[in-house]
Length: 360
Ligand code: AMP
Image (cartoon, rainbow, N blue to C red; front, side, top):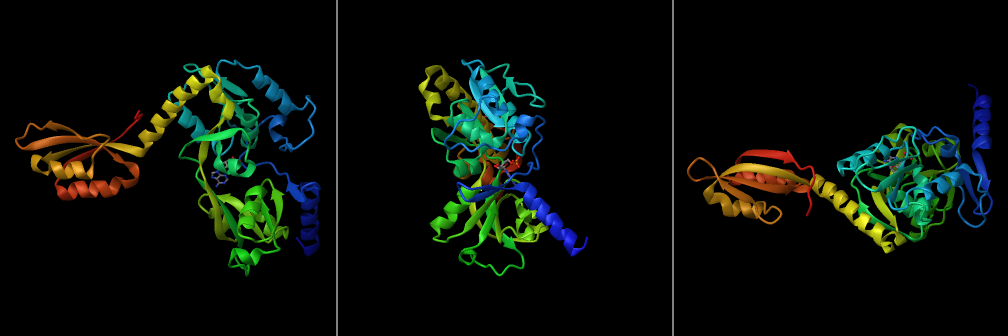
């Protein structure tokens, strides 16, 4: 391709994808999301602005809301991401919590067979709105969307320990920018303009933002921005696109959120409490390992100090004079240090087992 074709390509890209948002003076680029496996037209509609004005009821998204509103009102309604990065881990988490339901493929919703819960599959960036409006009672989404949209009437209930990522500010490798102050007056491309603006505002630096809904990392190459703020987990996408991380704006993980009013309806409060016991049981189990070991009786005081367990370790005599079998739980984040200490004081035959559920 010669320079004219490159120029033509870039201009076509910009004309086709850049929409000027006059009110906010922010430009929005709508690209299909990389991991959006949605099949219906409903799923590919860009997010509507939610300030002022009403949208005609004939819009597919409103039909979806109406449909959700007509669902069994005695059940809790949970919105989760359909066909995205969080979907598999979310389904896995719900199943580990003992919930039985149909797979989401080609479905708008699923009813749990063994718990009064309706699962609604939607775009993740619609979840704050669905929960805030009370269309659903609870939702699972990336904390990044909470920071970005700051939905009213919504509270975070639990961190779910998956979907880890960070909103990272990055610049082209060869860029002279070394510190965030060097970006003063420059344009930052991002899917998260509010988070980005807040970050720079807090640091007293004035920047422009351009909102891009996909492939943010190519914005500097296209000359649309001098830096980007994008979600990263390994950082490999930045490296592949010759970008250098400058700083982290925030860390994020999947979280459970609820509408404030959910707990004010007694039947829903009870259901939510029951669901939370299941969720916390799975999370606690992930945090601990069950450990069995043999130990000479005289090291017991030392073992108790190293691994006190939940209350105290379980001790039973071995069929060998002066020896004990000790059973306890060890926290995942200090697991190897604890095992090393146990070995160094004389524990042997250490067996480690995963815990499926743990109700504290
Ligand atoms: P997506 O399916 O790409 O729309 O991503 C959905 C959510 O996955 C995001 O809102 C984040 O909370 C989370 N996530 C985890 N790791 C990443 C990552 N490397 N890039 C983008 N999103 C991520």
